[in-house]
Length: 239
Ligand SMILES: O=c1ccn([C@@H]2O[C@@H]3COP(=O)(O)O[C@H]3[C@H]2O)c(=O)[nH]1
Image (cartoon, rainbow, N blue to C red):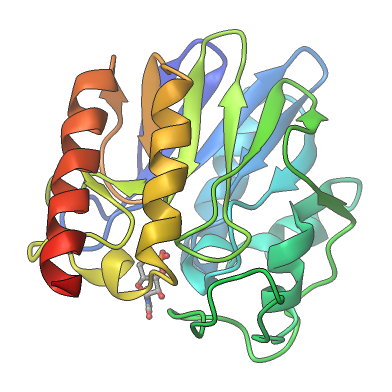
């Protein structure tokens, strides 16, 4: 595992060459928030990184319900019983194995590796623009119907989950990068992901920190190029 830190945000990086998995620690004076929880086999390393802060785990926030973002939750909950686990109200349905779509959503089946039944019960559900400790929850549907990003407002670092990937080259969710195709293959609805990417660009983050691949500093220009490329790719595919 390696680490990169910007202000109070630390990126924990696993398997960067083979199948990068990132999760994030956001420190406050009295505790730590973990964003995403990778897979069960890295749970002990995440636990050790939290212990190194010398602070308790206050909460775990999940960007979405894919299994490679939630895997360490049961282990970490057993180590920090006071930690509150939150996921968006929308992806809480996917978390418990319910893949049905809401009437206003694109009627396309969610993709990727999703639980067949609830691996744990979330403690709270959040909605767009909710403040959760040092973070602002931002709805960014597309990768999954209830995908969320989190903006650490002091440093303006955007923890973007799989709304973008950087492994294999920066790309909007759903735009295939052959050197790392998995997030695109697991994307629910590309036009929705594109709208979310534009919304995230309007935030003008200082850091773009994703679920798979290295972070980008001052990412506005590459984000806008990636959005344009994804738009062109999508137009070509739909003719
Ligand atoms: O052991 C694994 C690890 C990952 N995957 C898929 O790859 C996808 C990468 O993007 P994502 O993180 O949103 O979703 C992931 C999963 O759907 C998988 O099927 N089995």
